[in-house]
Amino acid sequence: MEQTRIVITNGKENIGVFLNNPDATTKELLMMHRCLVNVLIKDMVARGMTVTKAIESIRYSDEEALRMYIEHG
Image (cartoon, rainbow, N blue to C red):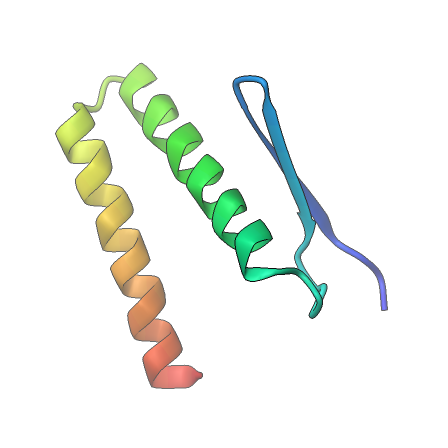
């Protein structure tokens, strides 16, 4: 199986995991999520969105991901 790696850079912190790695730890995945959310909020604000609206958008996205998981496994 081909490995798909994602690396997220947040300031001086680089977090990388293989997306299709069944052995990725919960800690690695949560760290990646944390860094991605941080990068997304910074990008949204840089593009003119308020911090409040950016956070609301991220919350909505996470809620939708959870709903999709519950509905489709």
